[in-house]
Length: 214
Image: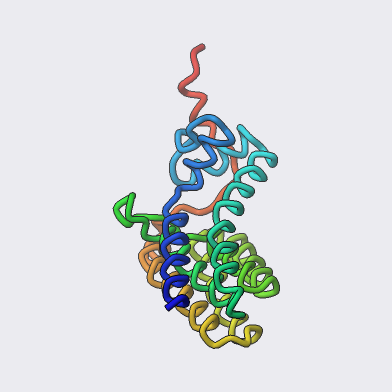
């Protein structure tokens, strides 16, 4: 009975935290301005870099990490007494990713959950998480497509989970995260094939200058 209570509690908390938009949280608590107004799509990243620089990225990453880490820590503590902390963290990671990809407050239209996958993997196992982080960055950098970077990281999560984890349930949850990611990025892959998906770029967008008064 206690196991199921902890499972439901961990799942609900993780999903709810997954639905929290990192940009909204960072805008209100750190930057004190609406970051979503900086730009849309591929323009957002270079515009953010121009305005806030490396320190801005560090602050945004810190918000993402802390927000995602909280439900993972809670789940680990709840399951620790039974010696299944890794299962609790894996369950929370799956629900966190689910909430990020399909957030109910936003009509189940979310992001690719790239950060949530990486943070979740780090809490499941540090070595697995580092492998996922490396695969995500490398694939995104080589292809210039975030969905492909996310997909690569998710695939490595399953491979590394099978090789490293000695808990069958935790491994299955890693596989479920990968399956969830594949389903989520299928539309993006179709857009990439049609050359309609925006590429990642740090090149500065200067269109904002046309709004300046001369």
